[in-house]
Image (cartoon, rainbow, N blue to C red; front, side, top):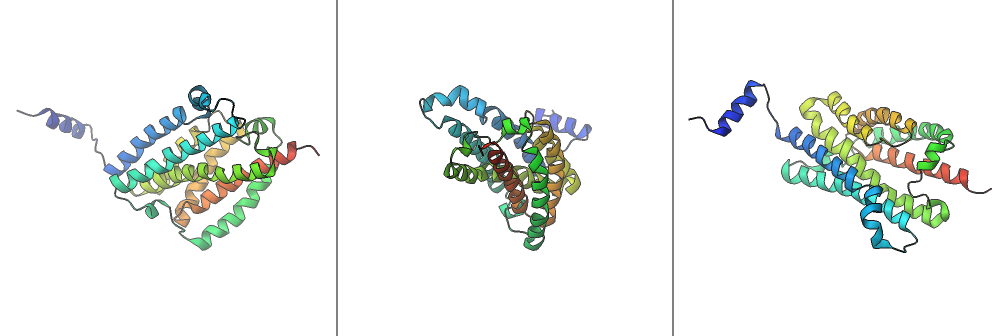
Length: 246
């Protein structure tokens, strides 16, 4: 008599379904980890469940933002890195945690950053962006606080870039092709921008594709991390400078 397991396998085959370990782990864990990050790693979750632990703290808005940075690092770098090493048996350098093509990477950074800065300057005067950034609205209170905050901002961006351009892009490229992997990682990276200013979420579509191409060209996430991080810092600088009294 056919066992239940055999029947299930025969049904999968009859539907033309088959699963490879690596893309299956990556795509399923992406669903789980991004959901956890969205629901439990947000500033809204912090306000509802954790803020009372810091009752009376004058830097509560900063703690709220740092919680989000830490959640991003854990959900988008620490856990995916562990899955990659211990389940998929992948080296992290194969997922972009390497210097890659240094010459090409530095040239790309030198070209892209000035162009991005030109686009950010008018953006920094738009009310919706000024209401959103810096994520810690008190960052511009003092220079030392601003510098410390922006340095910690890197924790957020390295988690983000490892997940989308490392874990997903490099992890899927061998199974579904580089072009498809670029598009697949662009979908969730764009959707996580829902709630941001309109201009940012549409820019995220282009950025997901461009960053994916750069990561594959340089064989590294380092250069897209540098670009993405410095774009975020530059926007904060422009906004803080524009709202400070003359």
